[in-house]
Image (cartoon, rainbow, N blue to C red; front, side):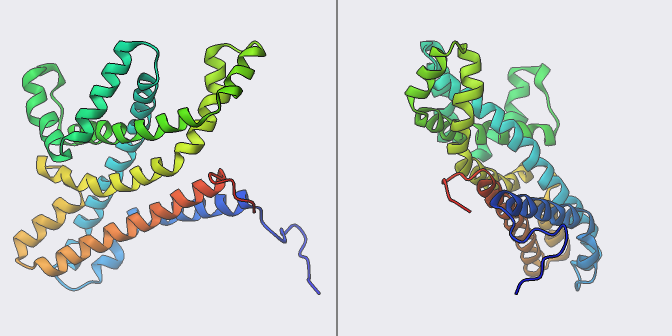
Length: 262
């Protein structure tokens, strides 16, 4: 015999479970960013006396990932629309952008934005953090573009024709019919690209951004103890990617990307 508590759901739906997982994982991420210096301070030297530096580097890493990740989604949508456009010039420009960004190393792109771009366009001189965000955003945007383009091509043309036959304009057909379905198809590779972006942000150390990898490199160079420093750096990355993977998996379940039933 089951005892029912007033106001307590006996069985949560898939959406409720996914929303709870997202909220819990997000709370864990916030606590990790603001409180991680406390457990690290209890670690042996050279970790304990540098705990605050690890915490600050972790926050910079997450900031890079969030800013570049959101910007990369916007860039990916625009590039995907260009790739599927009927205008030849837009298709050519979008294809050229994707070809260049996917065919060159990310480290070269970061160095180009920070060192070469100000020489070409002096008005676009950026600091190290902004340069890293721009390079990371355009790099992940190229990969997002292909994921979103595949989603756009997966939408049945019959639905688009049906929407147009009901009198919907091209704009509202895209907003209300095409894009929601395309985004649902593209969601798994998009979240995978975001998790990969978290690790790729470590390359920002090359231009002096004091993110997690740079902090670890500075500490091991100053203390001549690479093993504990690099192990700590790797563990922090592992925790961050694990939390982000939980969030991304819950987002996919929330929108039932694969059409699973509860």
